[in-house]
Image (cartoon, rainbow, N blue to C red):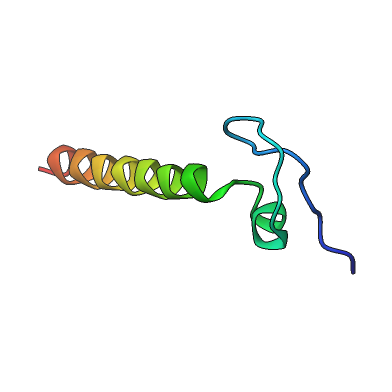
Length: 54
């Protein structure tokens, strides 16, 4: 099965150069930002669930 390769970053739309970036769909900087945002979102969700379970 062929793996999907992206030509442009899903976040900033810049051209992706490395194979690794093309496979994940994000350039190096945007990938770090994406992971940071994902982590923040998960921690906010955890806080919300904990505060609603009282």
